[in-house]
Length: 103
Image 1 (spheres, rainbow, N blue to C red):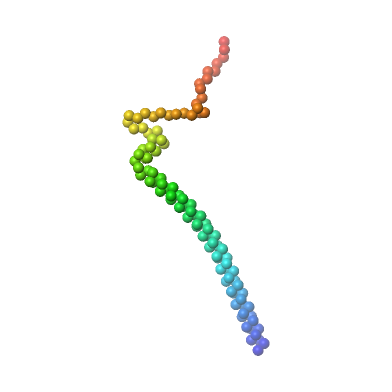
Image 2 (image 1 turned 180 degrees about the vertical axis):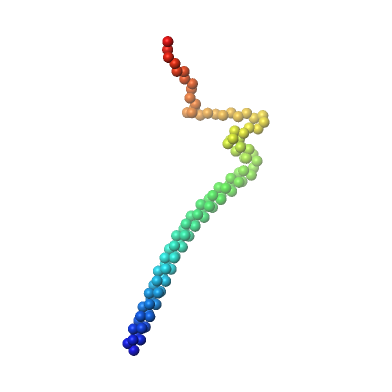
């Protein structure tokens, strides 16, 4: 009778240890999944913002006048009969100075 109580106690102890180990693994896996979910959520938000930006650019460039405007601004393109005027800021414009020696 005493032996059966010891066997039951040992079996119960092993079962408790197995359940505790399983619970520990579940908790660890939950933490890992929560970290992955947070990373994926941040990636989703970044991609959603990028998608919105690309969609706006596509809508902008769907209009031919916007494509021409960008072509002109980026590559100094001009259509026939147009003239390009380039305005140089004062800070980068340097007046010509004569250097020489007096006689």
